[in-house]
Every structure is written in structure tokens, then in C-alpha cells.
Length: 261
Ligand code: ACM
Image 1 (cartoon, rainbow, N blue to C red):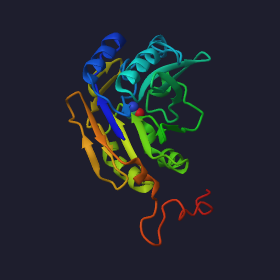
Image 2 (image 1 turned 90 degrees about the horizontal axis):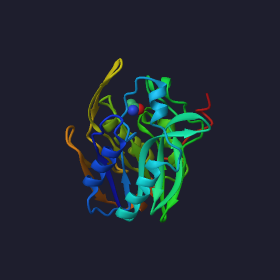
Image 3 (image 1 turned 45 degrees about the horizontal axis):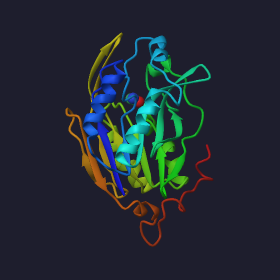
């Protein structure tokens, strides 16, 4: 299958322009899976909870409509971040959209820094979705620093991790090598670039979107300062083999009774 990331540079609050910029980057690309960054159409650095609420949408809102079009255009699945409004609560979330249909949303469970002022943390475990025979798991940005997130998805049979991000620390890209090695999965980390100085915060986003293989190899990396798309062909079935050698299987060798703290 073909999997890819799109790295963009959204202008804060300008959804229509940001949608159009992403459309320009996609052009005539066809891929089975395309991962867009966290909050790819809104920007990241809010100055109040009200500002985030004003940019929030229901799961059938404008971003869902847009991603449905994009998924039809690429003839595959697109996964990207948005602000979800559900039951009057505001979440940092992502949409999973395949061939014109919304499959689900995931609400980020580990909020970073002042996100805690704007968003309610999700309280549902991230899930794995079987789409066109491929088991795709999801998490959002800072979820990476809690290895349990990725492991719980691997235990559900995940082959490919979709990881929309707005990374501001320099560690994630190399940490994803470990996440992939310890779970023997493929991962697509889609990051953004640029700088946002709003309210009391200034963030520089680190780019370097990355596709990482089950064996710890980085298959493709974006630059730290240019928008673009990276697509690679993989055999997702390689992620099914958790056997490292004759004695060691990454899942079967777990001593979960000893980790119960
Ligand atoms: C982050 O979770 N966006 C750092």
C-alpha cells in the first residue's frame, strides 16, 4: 500500500485558506493513506478557550466535508486534526475519513501544556480501524511520549500508525524509531512548520514529518522548513511479524503480570 504525510504551514484561524493550501499540495496525488498534521486548518496557539470554541466543529462540519472531498480525490483514507465540538465540550481531535465517508473521530487523551486550558481531554482509548484490509491506529502528537498509547494500539493489531502532530520539542522524530521498533509497526508522523506568536506563547514547529518502519528505519523525512508531501510504498503485512529471533516475540514475551503497578 501507499502511505504518506502532508506537511503544511497554516495561518492561524484562516480555515478556508489553509484548506486551499493543502489542496494545492495534494494536486493529483493518489495514495491509500494520507496523514495531515494536528489542527491542520486552524493553527495551534490559542489565546483563550473561547477562541478555540469559535473554531470548533461538529464531526460533520466543514473540515469533515473538506476531508471527504480530499479522500475521494486521493482515492483512499485521510486522517487529519481538527477541533471537535461534542456535547458542548471542545476537544483537540482528529477525523478518520475514507473514500468519502467519515469513519470516526479520536479525541487526544494527553493534552500538552496550555492545551489543558482550551480543551477537554478525550476519555476513550485510541482505536484501530480496519480499512481496506489494513489495520490503522491513531494518536495525536504528545500522545507519543506515553508509550502505553502506541503499545495499546499494537496490542489491538495495528499495522500502521497515523500520527497527526504539531511538534514543538525536538525529540519525537527520534522517539518514533523506538515506538516502531518496540511494537514492530509502521508510523506516519505528519508535522507542520512555521512559527506562531500569540498571547503568552511562541511556538516554532519542527517540521521533519517522518515515515518510520517496523525495523526502526526512517523511510522518508521532510525538511524542517518546507511544506510538502512524502509518500512511500510499504508492505503493511511486515508489521504482523513480532518475532525478533527464535526466542523473542515482542508481544508474547511481555510479562504483564509483573508490570501491574
Ligand atoms: C503537541 O502535542 N502538539 C506538542
